[in-house]
Amino acid sequence: MARFLTRRLLAIPVTLLAVSLLVFTATELIPGDVARAVLGPEASQASVDALRHQLRLDQPLPSRYLRWLGGFVTGDWGHSYTLGVAVRPLTMGRLGESLMLALLAFVLLVPFALALGLAAGLREGRPLDRVLSVTGLSLGATPEFVTGVVLLVVFSVQLHWLPSSAQAPSGAGLLTRVEHLLLPAISLVLLCAGYVARHVRASTVETLSSPFIRAMRVRGLSEAQLVRRHVLRNCLVPATSAFAIQLQYLLAGLVTVELLFGYQGIGDLLLSSATSKDVPTLQATTIVLGAVGMLVYVVADVVYALLDPRIRVGKVAHQ
Image (tube, rainbow, N blue to C red):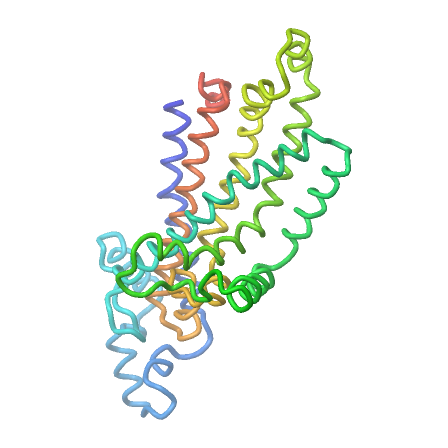
């Protein structure tokens, strides 16, 4: 278990280094002049050249990358070209907002997807199984902006049950913030639930057809006891990877939802920095999202190892 976890943790800095090189190179290749975009089309060429020199955009790409990497590692992420504030507190603050939305969506996703998958798997081949499978596939194929618009029209415009904006007023309490985040969280849950439910259903069907389940039935265990003691535990092992994939999407794929519901999270910051050619902010948000995504997979590996005895006793780790 220790070696398994150590190998995962050691892979993070190496992967982040490769991601940083890719991100820096990609952002530097964005069409257009960053200095011109900052000053506007009416600025003189002399002012543009002066800003390019001030931002060190006239230096070679390798030296700029090494200087940026050194500053990023030491906590100096630069200043936003368009907002004029330090990038580090700006990015981390927006990340905290997105984490709250993603966490709420994940808390709703776990029981909902498990219930759907178990219900379909326990009734394999029956009408309920077909209905749940088709519904999950349909929701998974529907973009979040479509489900988001439907939720807005029904629950905000017509019924007036929930606010249309995800951004709560300044100083609002936890319950108020959760109320504002419910609609975008539900739209994300509807998109992700079908994928996880399919994994849970497949694991449920496989577990129920295994010999030890038949032996447990012969010993007199009820269906509820079988599901609670054996089926659910076996379902959690493959579902862990599916949940990790969806949690990473919830963190990195929030751009559409945050834009639709007017939420000032890291997805909104990523989009605005890309459209305004705010290179320092764009680089920081991309690296942070990559780091968080890798941490999610490490946590998922730990949970997977705790649930799977083969990894826990070290058999898989030595392969």
